[in-house]
Figure 1 (cartoon, one colour):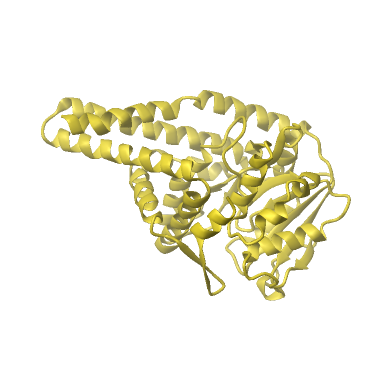
Figure 2 (spheres, one colour):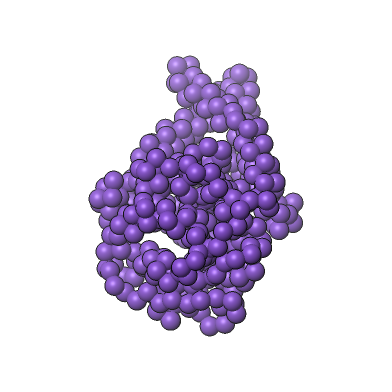
Length: 381
């Protein structure tokens, strides 16, 4: 009985705590989505980096070239011309080639910096977009609107995976990733995603972001640290959520998830440890309740129902907000949103496995070169 309550008690408390603030987050999302259309629209440069062929690339770039924003340029940055697939570029785009100038800095960061330096002088905002995700018409308006508050250093969205047609691992990636998006809300946020982020050009150089990026792998983590180190806020822009329509196999999903958590362990140890402890209790509570139920405990059955029900309710809330943030993909949510409820228990165990396995993920390969994730993160602490 001790071990039952040791895991089940905290698991239930954590599940209840996770639902707190959902009403506040939903109200925030609704208010921000309504306010984005009336926000300021200063001149902007949108920079997207290319690294070769990608599923949906042509459509993703076309979406970025047709944003509902009065004054912006689209800049495509690549290491070499061979990284730009034929017939992938829209007509309204500028191209810059970064070359290979710094072996200690990731190719993506070098491409981003080449785009920054090539941006037009009159642009007041720099926005970075992910080539593997699709932006809505109001994507840039949402990011710019969130920058209006003086205390905000950067505004961000996040990817929501909407594979069409889906396979098992693509849907699992969607369910697994959703809790990360669920961390973003009102006030200052713990991280940003450089696949959907905007920062004032003046702030970008004031915070010495080029120095923060030099010699690192994680542009997201380094920019997050630079913003928070300057006591600026990271604002979440619900309208800047992006839809990732690509597919994933088992190896791609597992490898990407482990790498993401390994980066989090190095750059955001509190978030990583919090996630690990939480999932130990979640999974331990499930295992304890199932074991006690098999042994005949009716109370354990109810404890299991409550824990699973709260987790699935949280998943429903996340997908409902994502549906409001991505209205262009309403059909996908009507057909597949159920996985964000029923698959939550399975995804919880996947989370635990990924977090534990990320302890043993120290390196990542980029263009044939192995790089130490932990050493890189500590060097930029």
